Length: 80
Image (cartoon, one colour):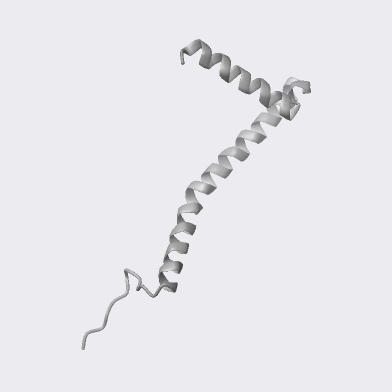
């Protein structure tokens, strides 16, 4: 895929986005607010996923290991 066709494809995707969201009907200042809100929400979702999803996966993994009877890695055995 060359640069010109990639540019055309990205432009086509942007046009599809404008058609789906009806943002082509907005005035420039409304578009600015709309796009700023959308980008802010996207960044917030990506940040939240980056921070919290690995923690939840780790917790769920430890929970299922505990259900299966395996001990935690940080369990210390007491030797008398």
